Image: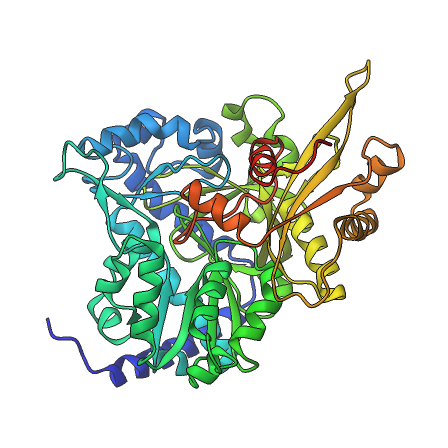
Length: 524
């Protein structure tokens, strides 16, 4: 089928921009759209063997759905996914699934398989387009579609899940699978760096090929993880070119997601140029969840009408009894409250039901429904009952460094237990591992940065201040590492490039002890 000329698509997308603007201005929190999403998903799920056996019925009410179906994790559905990989049809979703996405594996380093059905791919395509249309609404024109879109994701390639069955199921990064599955018009008129360059599995080679091809393109959008975009930008601007917008005059949007912008914000704004909008999305391998539609400080707009059903389990209830029964305490969108931390559950057209994403979200408004991601369920500091999420730590470090003019490459925080009382109360401190940007004009000392972080967290987080006042927590220690340490660690662990991310806080010392061994700090 021939692909229509680009101006026709740009015209159509301009009309869609107007339609999305109308939808965004409608009153309501999206609860009706969520009810429709569940009603649409249930018949397909009820036709799948695993969920039919679990009690899913095509006409069940939400109350029955909540009562019958327990919260699911990757571990609980791993046997069903193994059956799908082996070629069995109709396990978690009608039909046979041949493609699987590997999750980022940030929580524990293990990359798990997620089924990528045709319906899930359609969801990502529509939701991804919606996210870009949100930018077009904010810009008040559809100019972003007149140029090319550079996607800095994982390799656009898949490999057999089982090497002994090369013709069987295949897996890859979700961003790469999505690039391979673009509609013909998008591949021809928008996608960069082209499938040949995007298919390179070596991160450095893929970036070099993307840069070589992009030099001659009219880029209007660059998308990827914040750190990956910054790495590409530095390579693209080597020489006398001051900003990305100088090199690509029609560039208007840097679309970032998958990782907190945090300390990358000032760097990206500086590298991109004053006329380029930073536009945030919230997507996982399992589903596309939210997208910016105003100022990012307002939170991201929950995509309630993109075929995914969301539920929210109060974080304080997550560890309150067996996970199997926790789902009865979850609430749909209609039951959420502003300011409460929730573990996010998703039911998707990929065959996942009440699936625990391990993300912790907090609503900033209800009509419309907007939220922020504050961290991960298994990635927070709570050993001393200080209850700090990754967003809290990132925010404190970003604020301190912005005030002092320091620039950060990356960081990791871990607890260090120094004593335990007779009643089982732990005492200790936080250990920060921080790599500064070599271009930082005035480099702080570790103790100076530690004192700044301690003061900031004591003001902004009462639980932390209480721990410090009771001397459960000692003053933190900051270990400044040489340039390249974080990149070396990530490359060694296979977490460099693509969708790979850094674990920035943990409840144990696994990563911190590895940094200790690498950097050979004196005993403490």
